[in-house]
Image (cartoon, rainbow, N blue to C red; front, side, top):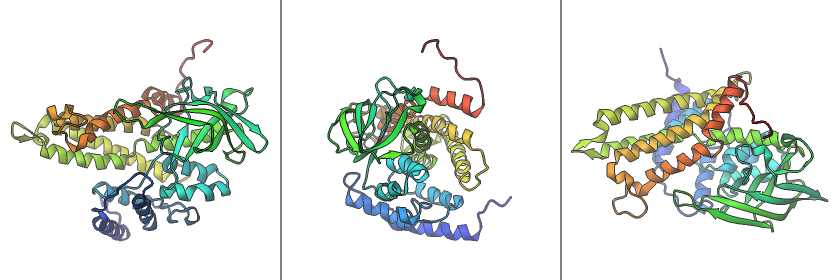
Length: 395
């Protein structure tokens, strides 16, 4: 069986390999919106290695949706230390939502600066009493002339301390059934009345925040979709979120780093990677990553073959991907032995503690973005058509 892509794609791979080798020593410095990071992001777009199929008029490369070329780009970037494209909630979640459901004015205003990394977004979904049951949210949005007035509280708002914008769910129809009374608004984070408070994580960082919103006024035009139909828009965004939390190509890049780590660590003078128990665990993780990559190709192909049903493939991405990353980071910690228990400022810390931090971070992501238990319910009910989980009477 000939599994070669053919001369056209072989030539394209050579182009990508040349670009990667030419730029693998690039070092990005400064905060997320630094000039060097924005310039690098634009270079990737200009060469078609990021935002490849997004139209030029919105800041993308304007190329066709060629899934084999996308796979080649992902494979070659995963092999190299070359800086990867910026991601985040704006790029990976909001941009595809706006391109699908936004107005022309919203596409022109938000897509280009978001893709370039000039505009950072956060997500205002969860509330203290509305996590897994997101549709029970209580933050209010009331229309006062040409402005929405927002009052309420959000929690677990990732990167809110760095963001210029927030896509937020608010209840605008208080008398409607809970899934039908929600609107999806775009809120500038410098608007008066927004109080951001960091939440300390078990990693020691504060990537999450609480938001307290008091008479926050934003333009009435800052709505995606129709008033009261925000649940539909939110589900489109959540679909993109689940994929972004478990990118198999990023996992393969991490796997390559794990292989190098296991070649360097030793037990009684023998390389960890040569120990059968560790090698067996490594190969099992590699097999799971390859399966995830194939699953991602199935999802990607549905953008060309519109009749292809990839719902199940999408449903399993977040569940399998986050648990896979947690297991991968855990193997790295085990491979380091007692060095894997170190943290923070120890002089013997490997890779500046990145393995320990990622291990805890992905433990959190197994919960964030919809817990594994919620994901299993979604798979069983929406994917397999099984009966819904019984509801407690009166809940």
